[in-house]
Image 1: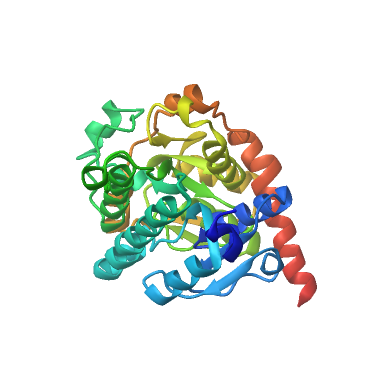
Image 2 (image 1 turned 60 degrees about the vertical axis):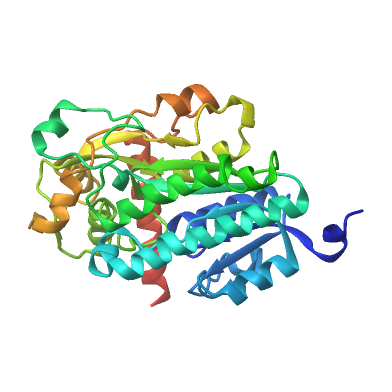
Length: 348
């Protein structure tokens, strides 16, 4: 028996656990019940998931917190969800760099050290974003309808720059870190899934530039008017939250030898803002939805592709969304959001 196994408990680490993806991921992993879940977030966890994990409330830039984690736990898998999202990152770019890049770098170092200690690769799952793309103008966006992973990696936002650089850091730590000095040694197993806009029924939008879609739905369910911050014709791809969590887990569980790359697009459906409004009005006929474009936020969305090519994920690890546009709205989003606000009204 190794020294590490006698002193520390094996665990899966989830950062950004109180966010939209973390909330759903914890529930799925806890239901499987195969591993101890340890979470880190600057905020407390919601009541419904707090009993499922061991939670550390704190900042990933806190080196003492990271040191405590590695002294108490043998971390085998890291789901690094913590990030300062796109709209907020534009307001505070220096803070975004610290959280998104320096926080990720610290965790990659931790994963590399754990890999050396255990003599087997720590798996590092990194959700990236459509924000890594940067199409120069609307004409180019019309021409390149489905963008592949290696195309147009020219982000125009701090968040996109952060995510793209962290993707590159993951590749460096997987292929090159310590290799020249130490010869052939175990390296981390970095896997990245690039998400389009995410739509969740269970958690409120939290500052993403694609959040106009879920914001329409939640405002309609509350009976509040909503002014959409992009034009009616603006179009990007989307994914329902259950499929986002499923994609993360599928990529994590895929045999290493089946993967031809470390970065994969995933998507489900692509809609214009007008099409989203029409579906919201179908579900909530009394909804008041107008369009009052914010020039800066709209320009960001215009730089993202209208759709992405996820054929590599489909071939390498069998990816296919379970929630197409009809099922996403009719079976998941609308019923779940209605139930959510009925519960709130009943508690008042």
